[in-house]
Amino acid sequence: MGHLLLTRYLVFLQIKRDLYHGRLLCKTSDAATLAAYILQAEIGDYDPGKHPEGYSSKFQFFPKHSEKLERRIAEIHKTELIGQTPETAELRFLQKSQMLETYGVDPHPCKDVSGNPAFLAFTPFGFVVLQGNKRVHFLKWHEVTKLKFEAKTFHVYANQKEDRKIILTYFAPTPEACKHLWKCGVENQAFYKLEKSSQVRTVSSSNLFFKGSRFRYSGRVAKEVMEQSAKIKREPPEIHRAGLVPSRSCPSITHGPRLSSVPRTRRRAVHISIMEGEREEKLCSIWP
Image 1: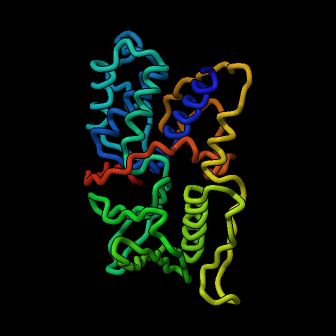
Image 2: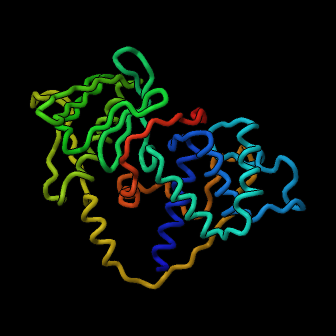
Image 3: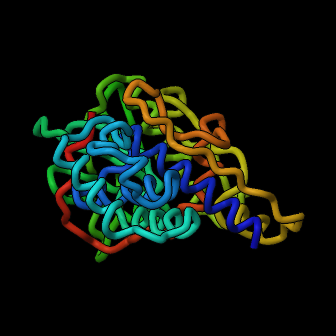
């Protein structure tokens, strides 16, 4: 039980970081609720003696946000979360977060063939394209047959129902960003799709042997990680929570255990409960 609490707290810290750095896109209403849960978890109940007017504006939960959003965060914190313990607030934060389509993924900024902005993302279930105010494409990993890139052009090949073959093409900002996008896609597909790490094969970005880039995912796949984690037995660890630092100039509001040095792939197993259902929701305008 202690290990579950520690894992949950570490995931809370990571998702809070993702929210701050703009990797967790969401509607404005959802953003306000998530920020209020963070306040409740780290400073406790609203106290007029300790929290003067505008206190929520001293904290930065997102890359940028409006005064209206700050007031809504304080309103939720003052009226809806009174009495919640840090553990409860963290749990509610995670439950709310995992309902978002961008939970547990890195959105990569690109443009489609018409020059329209889009975000490409890789989830435990497949490849996602977010554009405007909705999710415009979702391909399950078993449908994706190949990921390719050349310079700034990224291609996704897939076979859907009734042998329907499709090719999606997007353009990354730079060739380096495109290569990184391709590697992330190959890595995620291997991690989530394969049953065993022994099934991993070297993947090429081109059909020609002497052309393009090659990449081979290393490490265990999701199923193996989950199986090995279930066997771990040790004494329940203690959780030492660290409070928010009220400063807009602070580079990150996340304190406590550092997760930045841990490769994102090794953290993916805790993101497997991402929602798969199709939703068309307005994204919060907190992207930098």
